[in-house]
Image (tube, rainbow, N blue to C red; front, top):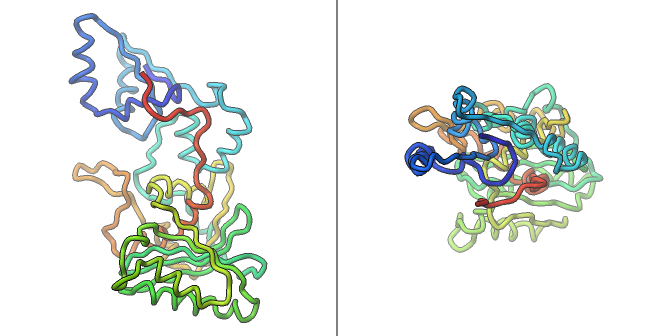
Length: 316
């Protein structure tokens, strides 16, 4: 039996072998019954069980959407269409099995809808978001206007370091600073920069903080204690590229060639058997780092809210 979003316990969270090798034999002597309740998580062994249940006479399979459950207000469902991309919404609220870790990572990206020339708006703060990979070291420069994000430029430095990245950033924004009196910069990025040294005695973030102290504009740092889960970060970016409500809220200047290539070429990793993993393929050293940098800012400012009506943990 299967009912989507009925409780927080998911059959997909236990090992594939648990049912045939442990649970099924334990029920045999008393002719016991089993009830499997869970939320779809792609085409895994929970999906296989659901499909098999529809073909066996002694089994029954049921599917219920969040809308049908009646426990989540219509306003919350409407809000979720703005927070989530199309595939994630179908999985989390409509009980669909979706392949969220197969093929392209940023499947919501479209050059026609997400790429257009950008101009610096002197009425808005700048943001700078960094990924501390050494080769290449990457970052993006942009602005946020309410629910929309505009990427003005990217900085991609082969075989570089954090101090050089800071110098390149100051050079890029110098014209805006002189012409429009740049007043405020918000900085985001890789939380692991608090622990990894790129100089003899300072962490990456200490280097950035020290460098920014010499600049005339106000700087604020928005760095989490740890990085978000890869899947959550990717879902946030896809929702900005194109959400369930049909909105595109992330726009990239065409000169950001590396970021655009990331969105068009980065794939999920696969294991030796060809199964998709919840990990981004890093086999191309030139890919993923610019989109990672942007993802830190997006997930920080547009993180997915906890799902209404969902209780964490396992219920017995």
